[in-house]
Length: 340
Image (cartoon, rainbow, N blue to C red; front, side, top):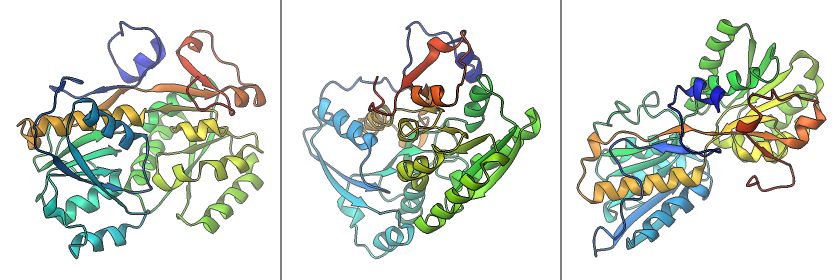
C-alpha cells in the first residue's frame, strides 16, 4: 500500500486489503441505529441516467436505520433542459418533499439553481462541488445543501499508471457539456507539463454518431498515442461497452476510474464504490434530520479508492506489475462482475 498512501498522503491503515473509505468529518458512520423520527420522510430522488449503486446504498442505509422514507424518483434521462423545465414549471412539486437527493454534478447544479434553497438537498457523486459551485467550501456549503464528492484526483490515476508503465502521449476524451470534464482536462494538461507527457484532449459530444466517429479515428490513429484516459463523465460512463469494444482491438493502454470500463477491458483505474458513497449520503440526511446544521456540515470525500486492473488486458498488453505494488491491486477479469 506504500505507493497509494504516498499518492494520497494518507496515514497508515490498520487493516489489510483495499477498500473505499469515505471521510465525513464529524459524522460517525453507521451511528444511526434507530429511526430518527416516527414521522415518514418524503424524498425526491433526482437522477441523471437511471439508478446506480449509489441509490441502492442510500436506500439501504435508510432501511437499516428504520427510517420511514417515501421516495419519489425523477430520471432526467441526461436531459438538463427537461429537468430545469420540470423544476421551473412546478411539475416536480418540490414543496411536497422534506429532502431532495441528487445524483451527479449536472443534476445537482440544475436542482440547486432552480429550488433556491427551499428544500434541503443531499448531493451524491458530485465530482468537484466547489469548482462546480454547488458549495462554497468543502468545510461547509453555506447553503441548504450538503453531500459527498466522488472526486478522485485524475492526476493520481496517471501517477499510479506511470508507476507501472511509461506514458509519452496521452489522449483524453472529454464531454464539452459537462464541467467535470473541463476540470479534469485542465488538471491533466498541467500535470503533463510537469512530468513530460504530451496530453491531447479529444472532444466527445454526447451523441452516439459522434462517439462512433471519435472511436473510429482513435482506432485508425492509435499509433500516435500510447495511452487513452477516459475521465469521470456520465455520458462516457454509460458508453463503456461500446467504447471498449473498439479500443480493445488496439494496443492502447486505457485508464478509466470506472469499474465498468475496467470490466470491459480498460487496463487500470482508481475506482470509488458508489454503494458506499450512497450509504454515506444516507448518513448525512439522517444527521440533518437529527438537527445538524446542513450549511456547516463538511462535504464527504473519498479517502482511499481501489486500484483496479483487468487481468486479461495485463496479459494481452504484456504489462509487468512491479513487485512492490502488486499486493495493492484489485485484479478483475472481463468475465467477472468486478467483485473478485
